[in-house]
Amino acid sequence: MTTSENENRPEDWDDIPPPPLTHSSLCPVFLALGWVCVGLGFIGAFLPGLPTTVFLIIALWAFSKSSDRLRWWLWTHPRFGATLRAWHVHRVIPPPAKAAAIIMMMISVAIVAVSSSSWPVPTILAAVLAPIAVWIVTRRSAPPRQTSSAAGQEVH
Image 1 (cartoon, rainbow, N blue to C red):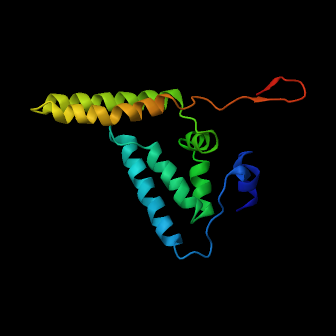
Image 2: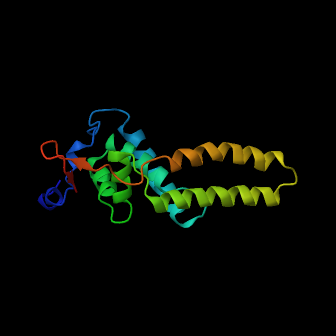
């Protein structure tokens, strides 16, 4: 990494394991998986119904095992970096992402219900998506606040 990259590193960068697998025969596999997921995430940014963040989270994981430079690129990406860091560090899903996910699920069920000639298919889809929606809604919406142990004050 260059000096300018080191200066611009987020504070929590060093807290994020694991280091790249530099001598692993699986590095090319992880690298390929990372690029496939970046591609799918890019398509998902423009195609309604296809998730973006999920694929980028997988890409970040794959790049963390194959390429520190590509991991850094995703970690500091101006559009997706903050969301990836929030998920990776605190398991946070921002409210707009939650809303988008739930709305897309509802639209998907509605489209299948309207286009299906029978009720079992949309019912099964709704039954599969409902627990996923509950899981998404129950994730944190913001990182936890840190408290100072000496003063008991919240640190922002």
